[in-house]
Amino acid sequence: MIHFDNVTKVYVNQNRPALDHISVDVDKGEFVFLVGPSGSGKSTFLRLVLKEERPNSGAIHVAGKDLAKLSNFKVPHLRRRIGCVFQDFRLLPNKNVYENVAFALEVIGKPRRFIRKVVPEVIELVGLEGKAHRMPDELSGGEQQRVAMARAFVNRPMILLADEPTGNIDPATSIGIMKVLDRINRTGTTVLMATHDAAIVDSMRKRVVELEDGKIVRDQSRGVYGQAY
Amino acid sequence: MRANFIFSEVWIGLRRNLTMTIAVIVTVAVGMALLGIGLMINSQVSSMTSFWSDKVELSVYLCKENSPFEACTDKKGISEEQKVALEDVIKGMPQVEGVTFEDSAKALENFMNNDSNNVFASFLKVEDMPESFRVKLSDPAQAAAVTEELSGQAGVSNIINERQLLDSYFGFMDKLQWMALSVAFAMVFAATLLIGNTVRLSAYNRRRETGIMRLVGASNVYIQLPFVLEGVIAGLIGGVLAAVMLITCKILIFDGIQTFLPEALGWNTVAGIISGTMAIGVIICILASFITLRRYLRV
Image (cartoon, rainbow over all chains, first blue to last red; front, side, top):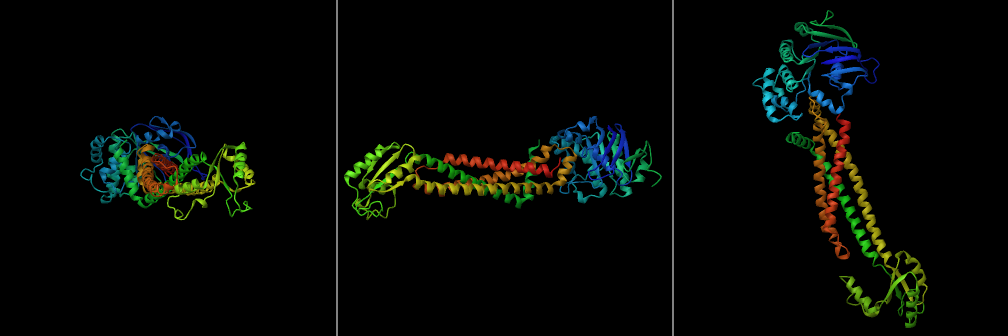
């Protein structure tokens, strides 16, 4: 599903590569934690999957497509198959829960009948039934992240990227967030989650890929966060 | 493509950026109006040039008794023999196509007909008017040579090249036209920058929305179209205002001076100019939006 082959990324005006000859394979339906300290290259990894950045060398395949050969014109179609969740939720403050989720479908031109059908289903899936008409500032952090997950998942992507989704949320609420991610994963969606949260990684017992200074230092199935923390 | 979604985005953008939108509309309106006025003057001048170039003549005025002109040295006026001799000389010149004699009575009549509100009418008498030969040239460019040759002849008081009279008028119109066009050019330039700035502000205001649109895979058209449409709508409103200004200008100024001009500025021409300036305004808006979006809205 995601295939990195000897990928190196050096940002302009930086000597040290953000990613240094990385090779990873993530299969369909896998749940993978991407761990490591700040600046280890987790976010760069996710940006490369979205083709927001281009690697300096190496090949990246996402959902069967060679990103180097993917024209800019087709990048939006790639992104429709990838959902994204962020630490800062990125909701539209002037739209309610329903509208925030529906926005993702409206801007890719889905018909209104389809939107009316699937949006309530996804809102229920993330556990926000009955709160469809709340505004984001009337919701807790955990609930806002659920809205963001609903938005990321509403178009049934093949891959869900989560960049520290629990970073702004207390541990108790984080468990709920992880349950939703697990539920999404069980529908067959590949989930790739970058995180610092040792407790969550340890409790989930999923595959762990650890980055340090742009290199993979560990790739364990059913791993934990690591002794050092 | 969901039209109502795009248009609601456009409406939000225009409302949030109201002051900039108004600035764009006013600049486009004034710029396009000036461009239109320049084109209107241009078409007026060219239609009049072709009208007059058939008609311009040299007027060879003849000495009368007590003529104040220096050429009329003897203060007696031209004799009949001199007149006949002069006519033969003129007819003998190769550059001359035809010549007619205008006596004092005819001169007075023409003068009265040409000038509508004539304060001289009450006291002008036939004797006051000069006699003249109206010389039509085969090529107006030869006027200087003919003038030089004829001004030495006895009994000629002065020679007026009507073309020169018109040239000063055309020269004035020409300057007016270039002034309008250069101000129009400056306004179009300012409008381009303003539209660019408006689109930039608009893109900044909605960076959250466009960021999410990018993430969920909205196509470039979907992301950029609302911004371009904002520019187009502002350009169109500006164009309509410019059209109103041009129509007012045609009615108040061009129709006002119509009594003095042989060729009217037709509504057809005005309609053509209005649609032309509108198209230019909208095209400028589209281009300015696209160029700015390339820089400020990475997709």
